[in-house]
Figure 1: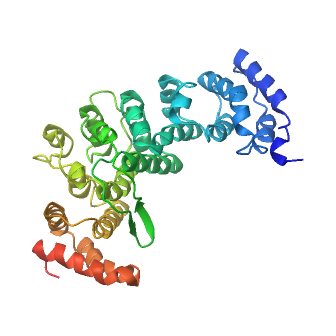
Figure 2: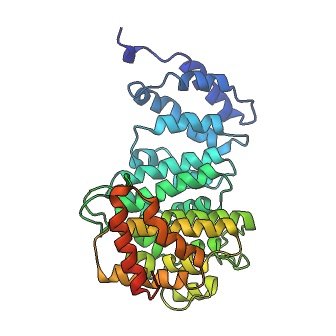
Length: 365
């Protein structure tokens, strides 16, 4: 018998259990019923189970108050073959936001898995860009969640969304040290970029969550983070920016909201998130954050070395490196020795690129 035609055992019992949970969300969850079905799932049998299980799972999750990890694990598997629009026909924006802002990391991962579907095409990314409240909840949880796995998932999803949506991408794919940064694909519509970087509320949210001065809370009710959470948020922003800068450097190095720069960073002018993160965000007395800043510059320069040349790019990098290394010998030494720590095939070109950036920055090499 073809294994794809073998029925999944235990589905009837699981479906009845979901019905019982819908009637009384306080019932104890029988994890074995979920595990038994999940272990049998394949690409062939998932489609037939989606209409039976996923709508009920979605409704149970809305009202379940215990740890939803078992529910979320099965839901993630069932979502695998669905598109964004198919999922939105089953789950409302409010239910996605509820899962995104849940204190349970499994619910956050589930909600981010839904948003990751929007990275499949520019059209799907455009649909998500119109859902401002969903995007706001995503940015909030990506930066503020204390769990490492939520931050890492959020960084991947944000990077993939802005990759597929970029309307000014390099014509060829990019890779550094064998790691793929951007794949070759047609340009997107740029709507997610506008939502993240040109929406005043979301831009203020990012600055407020990552600002060195935690007393400056976002005016629209963004969470107030502890010192530890704030350093997590800063680290997440530092790690994602080099990849985003490969897609659209001008979007990261200029802003429409200089008044927000002044409020959250004491930064004058229209400098963007790149300058905020590199020059004004972290407490330089925090050893771990200083190391994160060094990692950021190493990643930024390694990636920018392989992006298309432009005078704007070089002027931006020279200014950034000049200002950052002016009082930071450790950072300067790390940048100068970076070619010695990269793969041999790329070391000479990286050394030449760094020399160009730092010499023109009036920094002795």
